[in-house]
Length: 155
Image 1 (cartoon, helix red, strand yellow):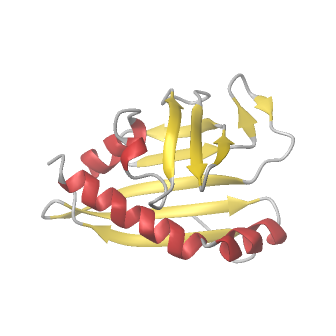
Image 2: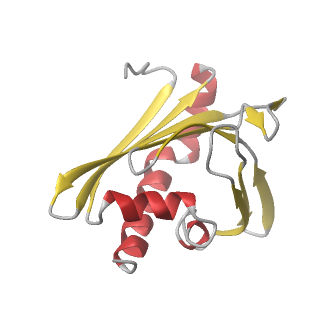
Image 3: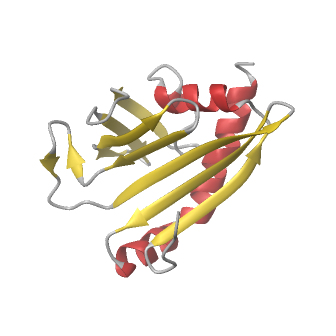
């Protein structure tokens, strides 16, 4: 995949957990709330219909502010790849103010480890810069660490 440095932010980590478990953490309403946002923030609701066009909705509590993030899955390859966006919501309804599309890949690198790649693709250079300024690298890095720790408890 060709990245555009003006539009795309990327995080790559080697996580000490099998990709099947990491994928399960990303696609299960039971597991996602435990690791998905940097603590002490929390997920207070999620609806995951993991299929192309299915809902990918999460609700966060960030310092007492409730934030909804509703979208759909664009591509689902079990244990390998997830692509979701907030450009559309369930039923392919356009979001008037979309923020990004996420592209996640899970590559088995042996010994129960996974190369985890998260790409946040934005509609404009301004949106990408805003996301980076909001803490993309540190926030998504923290979430990757939380994901790894949570997944290790599921082995």
